[in-house]
Image 1 (cartoon, rainbow, N blue to C red):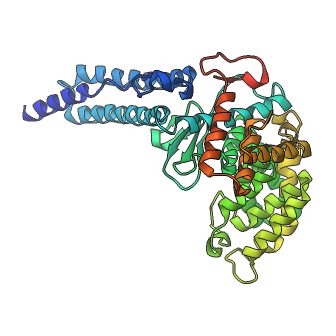
Image 2: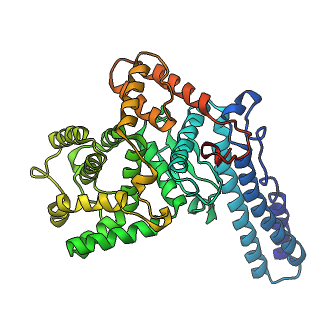
Image 3: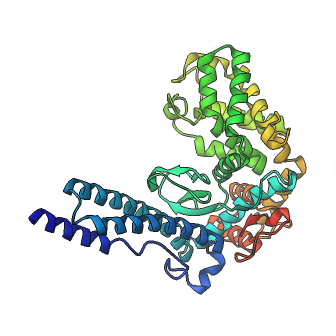
Length: 429
């Protein structure tokens, strides 16, 4: 009887914890009426609440079963059933916590910057829809940004199973912004959005298979082929970032990747990220293919002045020796060869970037440096213009950040609007 009474108390305590994490709204996460312009859309709240309600339903089902069996079932079974309820409560706690962390930040001082980043992310999808109408199967819930610790931005793709949530799928793309990168001139943000584009376009496997076939046929080297095959997602995101933001994105990535030589010139076995030294050479090749040979040459000279593998490197000799021959194949295959899931178009076709775009970005940078608003510059290009304005040395960073954030938020679609048919409004609000 002592053991059964102990189980009764444990079940009572468990049932007392079994409710309350099944819904959230603006008020519950601290978003005030004045914060609404920067808040997640109703569709994001609805998606979060659907996921929470599904978990809560499973919690309640297991609690109901436990309530009817704990008195008569063997003690070991009762303990197992309790553990299963605890598992679902842990899932609810983790899922609620993730959504609460993201949504509640829209009532903080970071809300305008996060909303501005949302606008850039939506514009990246808009670029695809405008160049390739109907390429997506329908409206998509837009990416949502939030602040967190970490050195670099990162993303959690739509539908990916998150270990943080005990295997729950992510209902919409999430992009993490480090606390010190809240100013929207970060080329690495375009890289993270590109990961989501690659997933939503459904070309991860097709892209990897094509790259592996190409390199194995070219190099006849299974080891080198496996390395580039493992790197393919990151290379895709790098190349797509250049097509989204132009040469400024290449320079931004180089600034982000510039570290002491032992890090930049060290190969990490099993890593999904290309070795930084070679990664910039891949971006240089992409700049050449895009027609920006001047930027390619300047970036090559800058990188060579900092890093010389003849003095030091920890790269596999075959990887270094074959890089100049294989990198053009890598860039061509990923960015310029057609794919079935892109309706027999290439990445460069569905994300076109022209010299006219670059001229507009440069002109926009000049206006930003003078404290003026660029006219007609898409949000993704405004990121590049802001990067150029910052490096001009003629602006106060905080003033520039406030100006760009304000411009981006004035261009944001109405948060409560329903998805529309036009390319610019095709993402869910």
